[in-house]
Image (cartoon, rainbow, N blue to C red):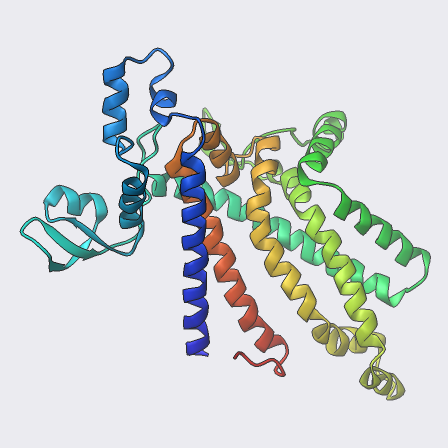
Length: 352
């Protein structure tokens, strides 16, 4: 188990390194000057040069990449000064010259070009909102999807089964950004008098008397929109897996023994049918973080997606890269947790 997890960790690190290389060079070949975006179109040459020097944009591209990787890695080479130690929060390991040391530190994602704020602090301010949105959307998809999948399998070839399959097909076919616009218009505008929901709004809002308050109703429409497609996938996977399991010999034996349908379905059949569903749940949870970019933008929900889209519009590379690395890290960790969950659900599965 330990050796397997170590291998998966190194594979995941290689994936993240590949993402850094691709995004870094792709971002830098775009015909956009971050210094110009920061200072405006009427900025003088001296101001632009000062900004480029401050963020290291005046150096050749390979040198910029080397410096970025030095900042991003857990072990890097840094100046042995109080200012440098305060900036990177590093622990010196050993000296390589009078001025430089090899140090152990957390990855440094740099500062935003636009606000000069630390990228980590910016992400920490919005990531909880996105995690709440993705988690509630996934729970919504799991509960409704598994229930409808079981219902469809138990009532195979009836109107319930056909209606459920039609619903799931519609969910798979509708892109999140399109579904978000339709859902926002119907339930947040046309029927807002009855639903009490808004077309846009974030989880946290400011009240002049109470300060910052949680507005849970602003979570409802983004949650449904984001969970709609994984719900449709889970319905079909659960139905197909349940139909396969319900045709096994041990299920027929359980029926012959006189066990109730509830016991047969929920204690015997469901657990053995969960493997493909777990895979879908894990994959979609990571995908929801990426899908939240469009949903958050449509609903004006302040989260990781909205922050990243705004950063893309302003060519704010450190914020964009920080967001992408966070999502990549979530993908890697979820893949590892899925493999471990397989062993828990089905003891026949062995990690090798």
